[in-house]
Image 1: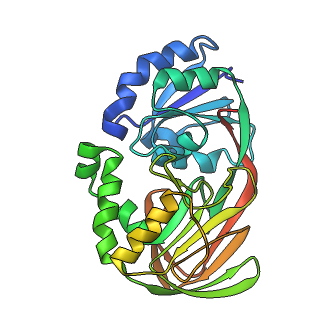
Image 2 (image 1 turned 90 degrees about the horizontal axis):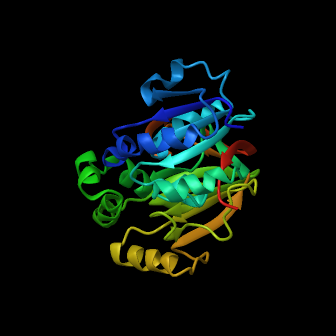
Length: 287
């Protein structure tokens, strides 16, 4: 492990934090091998991954998401150097935005096998969101993220809370038909939001073989914020405002539906199949 290392960088992520971390990462990798290479995230797809046993992502969740499809069900190990706005997967793995703390964890070489999503053939590690969740992720201006960092999503969350709209969803969840009128639906492998401050599920794990599903069914901003407050303080019960449950697979009947997949805007035409690929990616994380 770490005999031959590829370091995938996104120097524009997180106020260009990766630029500041580069020398520290080189110093760390040189403890293990002289066989390493830096590539920009835009060059990654053209890179031959055959020689590399370890791939580091220096960026945010978007950088990680571009790497994930190429290492599913392989022996390659993913290491994350959190440099982005959100860094949700890193936070779930116990990795810190502090470069020295993260390197100390990675040096212990504790490797976990985690689940990932397959969404109509796309692979991702975190979540897929429709409605309100998609609006926050896809419509928060980059200028706002550059200025306020992760807090920009919190600001956007308040703004879009006043624009909630319901739509009808027809789904087959683990073989059972469910119809719901909702303003937000989230399918999460890692259900943490705002670092690890908020979670949208109970007993959520990255390796349990299940997705957490959250459905918000209100459009009144006051009721919405009360429901959100209950989530923050850990009260997550099924009621006429929200539902929480777990599943292995979901099919959504769809003509044309906008969503985000790990922060990337998607317009999906045709039915949407979401399923869990159990323990299919190897990553460094905290015990």
